[in-house]
Amino acid sequence: MMIYKVLKKIPFLFIFFSLFISCNKSEEEKTFHAKKYPRLIEFGFNLNDFNIVNDTVKKGDTFGTIIEKQNLNGKQVFDIVAQIKDTFDVRTIRIGKPYTLLRSKDRTNKLQYLIYQPDRLNYYIVHFQDSVQAHKKVRPVSYKTKTIAGKLNGSLSETLVDLKVDPSLAPKIAKIYAWSIDFFKLKKGDEFALTFTERFINDTIYDGVDSLKASFFEYKGKRVYAFPFAPDPNSEKVDYYDENAKALKNFFLKAPLKFVNITSRYTKSRFHPVQKIWKAHNGTDYAAPTGTPIMTTASGVVEQAGYTTGNGNFVKVKHDKTYSTQYLHMSKILVKRGQRVTQGQVIGKVGSTGLATGPHVCYRFWKNGKQVDALKLKLPNSSPIEERYKASYLKKMQPLKRVLDSVANSSIKK
Image (cartoon, rainbow, N blue to C red; front, side, top):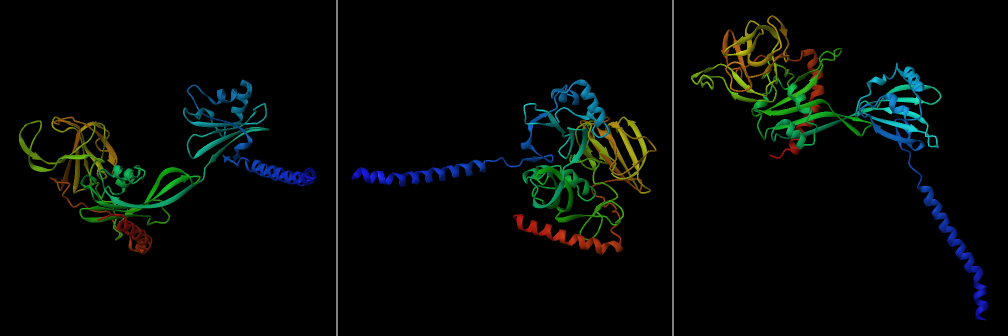
């Protein structure tokens, strides 16, 4: 009787196990199908469709040697180079630049495409299928706006690095404020705020700082604002103005060098380090490594360029009937007498010629024929925005200023 009952249950157990195995098999099939590779799109191709070789150009590599390894003979290479020369000059490939080979996935591994990347933004695609051709492609670039605020902690570049901002923004800022702020006088703890745009390739690859949209720096207890504006809508020329529509650009730069130290100031009595006597020092000494570019602080005409025992190699520039400037101890003079120079133009290199104990430039300033202290002189500004453009400027500037002030007030701890 017991055997009968067991035999009677066999069909039921068989059906149960069949269903169980069938369900498991179905689940396995689902799992298997879920493992399909996602589409990996790069350079406009689904890379899953190819056998891929990623490499960089090595010393001794040429376009020809790279593709010859893909079962192409010298005659074929010569013909390919000739066919694509108007689009892609293969002589421009450089050591260290990446390239990608897309080959067929069958046993032949036949070369289908070569992609060469001279930089992060541009790339060339060479087609090796029915007809050989080449195309230059440019990755899409997007821009993102960012506002930060903080306090100086060391140099501006060091502070930007601490805030995870590209330090290449520092020289852009220095150039904008060159006429309004003496960066040698900025102190640790001085406040600042910046709104700037950053470039991204394909929305993901960081490509550096694009431009400064708004800023302020605390200087001598006051916030000095800067906002870009092009008064003439038909011109690409952009200048920077403050919150009152006054130009930041002055007739003179604050200094003939960038990011250096003042080692000696204008004084009526100084112990001369070479002559070992007390005498007047009618200039400002800026120390910098030999070879550092020296800029003329305003446009004008080179009045003198030469050498004397005391001055060493020097240049004197006459700016107008009132002002002249002189630059001493150069290692090299880069202009000639009578030459017209523009503000910021490099006119020489820092050195230690003449009566000098180390590399520096002695910057001297004349007003109405008399030497004066350039650091104490109130220098003339450029013209403010014309009245007809002022309303447009203020409309554009005010929301930018509100963002700067808001971020500064919320993020800078007093």
